Image 1 (cartoon, rainbow, N blue to C red):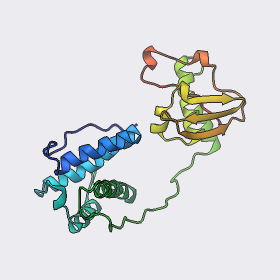
Image 2: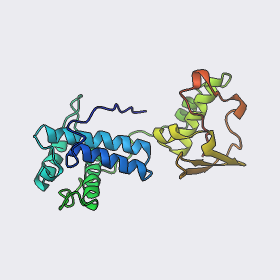
Image 3: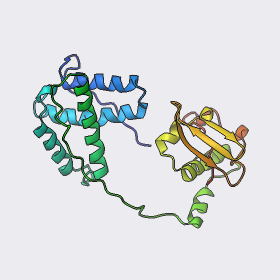
Length: 233
């Protein structure tokens, strides 16, 4: 699971017209309007990069950001190279620019800006790529057979693998699931997110879960793991 470190934002957060203070206000607005905690954290990271890019060019006020600057930042993302030398994917570029456009749209709605410099920004066309390699049935069974079901940790690992494979949940979504977010009726299970929205529903063709609830670890070495009930498609 990807971890994001909370780096301090540059600038003066007490300046009501500064980019840093407005970003903190925007993140607080997202949190109070029931955005997921992970979404708020990712927005802080992506918009923090734009904030540092602006400060490198001595731009600290929101009214100093022009439409031309937004276009320059979009070109900056296109030519940007990661530590390994690879460029940002089109999906990552679109994700960063979408966060930027949402931030300036919020400032315009709050009447903090007379004009939205990102309103006419055109996002890059995203690629629709197929998976490079899909596991065969034999390979899937080989992966699922790795955990030792005679041990509690093995039951845990098998449950995590089956949950990810059969539901298609993202790692972040599965990490947010707890016992209380799963309800089962027969062979059907509903997975509910921590904030009350339904993630997925599924039906198990095996009619049972890998291991009983009593065998699932609850504490100690498993304190970092939030158990979930998996399903099979």
